[in-house]
Amino acid sequence: MKPFKSRLLLIGIAVIAASAFFDNIRGPILPIFARRYGLNYSQASAFFWASSLTSFFVSILSVALFARWTERAYIRAALAVQSLAVVAAAGGCYPSLIASGLFWGIGNTAIGMSANLVVIRGSSDADRPRMMNALHLFYCLASILPALYVAKTAGRWPLYAILLPTLLLILPLWLCAAALPAGGVQAPAPPMPWREMLRPHALISNLCISAYILGEVLTSMWLVTYLSGQARLGVAEASGFLQLFFLAMASSRALGALLVRPGMESWLPFPLMLAALAALSAGLAGWRPGFLLAAFAFGPTFPLFASSLVKDYPRTYASLIAAVYAVSTAALMLGHVALGAIGDRFSLQAAFRLPSVFISAALLLLALRLRAARGPGEP
Image 1 (tube, rainbow, N blue to C red):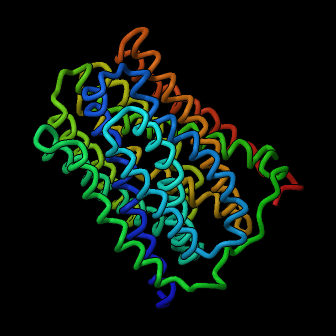
Image 2 (cartoon, rainbow, N blue to C red; image 1 turned 90 degrees about the horizontal axis):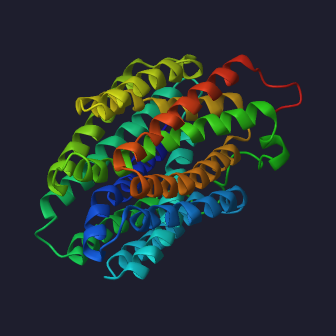
């Protein structure tokens, strides 16, 4: 691999690791917030849906920013906003928690998108599926750390002492971004017109990936709350189980990085999602290892979806990935609200069936996508 592309891969890994930490520390600390502020499930879900709201807007805005900003400027702006999110979360009151959610959606969404785009830039068509699996392997490995961190500190440290040390992750990333050229590395393709994103193949692709993301993210972000509320585990024990969840995802992504070959991105997500759906059903029926099997099936799925977008839209993938983020975060906002409301109105057991509903929707959309070739007017 050429030195410049190797540098992009290493930077992408560093950035995705930080994104994973900030993304997945929210699930373990949500029950702590809820207990400290006396929140019900709907009130607690506001921390999540507030971040989804701003994530939606930054995803749309990023379509334009990718054409105007360098990766260095984009990543550093994202890191600055993520720092504000952590400081607000440590503020010690419910309004500051909501403000933190708003900042968190901007900062962490932009960090995650930039990691994917940097690695896509540094890979070729032949090695991209394996490189994306490798990238998201590091996402899973880094996702174990926040669960471990919260498991060791919950009940021992005050909330601000848990949150503020995470700011130490920002400085090395700021320095990593300096390794990217200050100019001349804007998005490698022109923006994809919004009307093109509404053509059948692009639209079905977007909705399919967004439905899958919704199912996977609701599972991981609410798993600690589900286990502590439904299975009566302590936050530390439930956070320990979340470590195993991400370790299962990491193991399958490691296999994907080794075994996935070009062309598999077109069909492999279908059996993986079927397996995840069956495993989630087993977990909800009381067999807790089912959630770990679902995580194993989740592992390679998103990297394969991202690779398929680049394969189908080699010139406009940056805009389409931003559109996927926009749709999925808007859906996540509604998903968090719905999960919290169902948990309050019925039970957390009933609410935690929502991820399976969205995985089922993704399967149906993928079946349509596999049957529908791109139209003659689609890029």
